[in-house]
Amino acid sequence: MYRSYVMICGGPNCTLLAGRQEKLAEEFEVQLKLAGLRKEVQVMRGGCLGLCSSGPNVAVFPEGTIYSHVHVEDVAEIVSEHLLKGGRVDRLLYNENEATSTVRSLEETEFYKKQLRIALRNCGVIDPQNIDEYIARDGYAALEKCLTELTPDEVIQIVLDSGLRGRGGAGFPTGLKWRFASGERGQVQKYVCCNADEGDPGAFMDRSVLEGDPHSIIEAMAIAGYAIGASQGYIYVRAEYPIAVKHLQIALEQARSYGLLGEDIFGTGFSFDLEIKLGAGAFVCGEETALMTSIEGKRGEPRPRPPFPAVKGLFQRPTILNNVETYANICPIILRGAEWFSSIGSEKSKGTKVFALGGRIQNTGLVEVPMGTTLRTIVEEIGGGIPHGEKFKAAQTGGPSGGCIPAEHIDTPIDYDNLAAIGTMMGSGGLIVMDEDTCMVDIAKFFLEFTVDESCGKCTPCRVGTKRLLELLTKITEGRGTMEDLDRIEELAAFIKSNSLCGLGQTAPNPVLSTLRYFREEYREHILEKRCPAGVCKDLLTYSIDPVKCRGCTICAQNCPADAIKGSVKNPHKIDTSKCIKCGSCYEKCRFGAVIRG
Image (cartoon, rainbow, N blue to C red; front, side):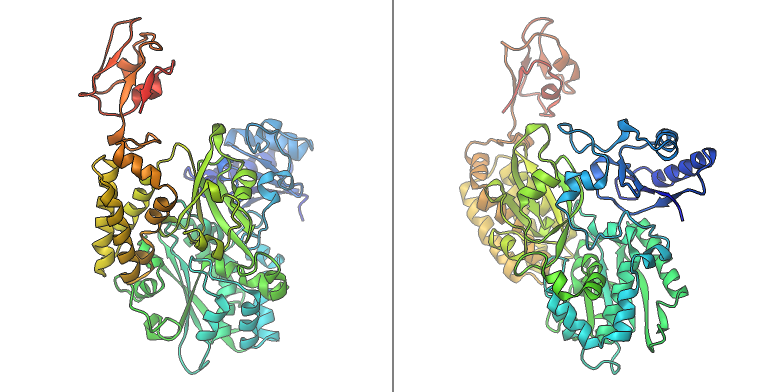
């Protein structure tokens, strides 16, 4: 038993530089030994604490003190002042934003006050490579309860009554999916699959759970196997997540050695095992039939439905597929009851949702909030608002499959139905915040470029239609668009949505349609005025120099790569627009605000 625990965050940002977590851990071990504290303080390599904008982060428990931007050279001071003398290292204390004072513990942070961590309950709290720490926090108790106290049908009913819906995007009731696949137990080979092939730009929710709490997914999949009568499962994880894969491999070996996977689990006669399958990062493999085709060793392409996977899935056998976050909710539901879980959230969207909060926001990171929390709460309170006093313009939910929420809807409670009503979707949980310097036409183009690259090409509406849609958007951003192009975009988008084979194509036009719905005037300005109001679309930009403000310092001319700026010292300069390549260097370097971008 230790008096203190040093938890070194292992989130994506905190481990951005190779070996950052390990180097900090090794230095803590050295300094603790020098201070004679090695038997009193335990160093732990944990999962993501969620505070990504301030990493590398180190938390000291039981007090919950957070130190941010910690480097190896800071470790000796933390050991000496905090762990030895009982004080604090004030210069390293986590500071939520520049306008507030530093906070001393997790509970004091605005970042955590409005959160409710269910799926992320163990991330940053336990060592993900130590099964005993997971067991100490009720790990595998839910599996034991299911196998010794509940029938498979009772397990499914609990999941149904909880109101848990799939967290991968579509929001299909999890218990209903399990029930569809539950027939003929023991007579037909069945499979349980986990979609850990997280592909949305900027999303790292599933990665963080796998890296910080892998046993929660293994236990939940075993429960799912018991519920539907499956003896084999597959975790389909992207190969670009090496730490997640490593932690899963360790967790699987530990679970087998403890008799929690394999034959005759808990002496009940139930047998279940898991295998990891690595994906190659194809976005289309997030679609369930494409994922299963990939597991089978074939090219990851979607199949027509019906038949649905619950009837004919992996290897043409009944299969259920849920994503990482969905499984991460299963064990708490079993242990605490369906009524507890259904009391959280909104009427038709129960529980919590994990978001990867990014973009133009003060506190980027991983957050988990009850369904029905407003976007304003997430952006202004948890996220700390927009940096540099800029105004909120929109937020993109659902990544390439979703749409934008404009400022007029910032008080919308976020759940499945409310988002659908305003033209977007929950998606897997990416939440990108944008300020007034964001061009919405360019944003739509960005997500569509991603979808075009990731299309498997199997169906013509997606393979060809998305390319034609991208061509129209490119035309507008280059100043060649016409008002008729907007009608063409809407007509083509409707065709793609209604005729594509799978969800990738069916949702590809969403970012375009939502930006057209709420920011149509911005499209008009691009077309009619040949102007990008946000100053983003390079082909529509012009640069000039205000002769009154120009001091003739020559900084702009010295930094111009095209030699397009002429003028003598202490005299106003001019830009030769025929030479200007619109790089923006002059605009960025001018100290007197003399360069005008329009």
